[in-house]
Length: 462
Image (cartoon, rainbow, N blue to C red; front, top):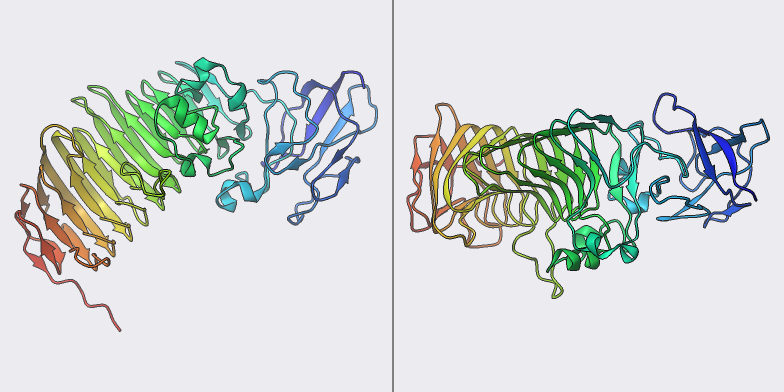
């Protein structure tokens, strides 16, 4: 069939009308789905009551000169049937199978319907960079399907980004996804043994892009779902992330700010990654603010022997000169809820209501993490810190960490029912820190350092 110019009318799952695009492609003569449905008639609109397993949403493809409708494309798993790509950047792959998403809410558009089947044109393509003054709003999901095996060596060795935001660029995903497809499945970034060099990590996971969104120089992003990268969101030298969901990445959000920079993460869900949030701000004069963030159910990363790797599994690993966490939760993670680590002097402010529950190890932990020198400073509590039912110690201060814990008037730190694995306690201090003021609640304490005077934990009703 000759290459022809077609007008594409898309019945998109998102509410509202879409602009009509002009596309060039070679339409195949037929498409057969894996479920046996042969699709060759396309005048019907999408059935909003369609059940899983029914035919997918339809395109109505009409020749510009008014000829009849001809074809629709089907999706089978994570592969695309019948797509002839004229340019790797012109078309993008879309798949909407629930089996390729950890939960159904991640596989749906913001209207709650399955995403449409390809092909169609997008103004956004994987690998783009947006600079100062750019303001981008997504109209659809962005899927990156470049093949790792065909990538040039410079790509294989680079920590490249699917989307890069620089300066005061602003990205509003409007609820849509930024994701990539790999031959190893939707959880490849979490379950593959990704150790060694950048190239070795990417090869083990068969991932073309190392990072989903790179945020640099105070750029902003909001309303995004970012999934299936070695680093879902990477922030360097200030950034603003809000109203987003980050899942199925090796590291959900990674932050590395230089001197005098600050990053804020707010009203965001970080879940089902190998580690939720990892902040490594070793420079002076930087600040990380985490406000209304839930970093739960991060599952760790196993090596080839089946052992969990030390650096993974926590809800939040936070290292920096100024750390502020407000009205947030880090629960049900494989390792720790919040870990304050590093060396040097830090100020940690825990504000509002903090919940650290059901983590595999500690709810709250301080550790110099094998760095040279002690971790010194102050931990201020202005609100209520709830540390319950963690597998090991509720609040643990390791050797070489000397944080003085201060509770503001009316504030409290409650550590109860921790140590379900046996010998652990609610509050343990093996460092040089102290516990000032009243407001501590716990039953069991331990360690060689100073310990607080606690009120007894409440007795649960039978």
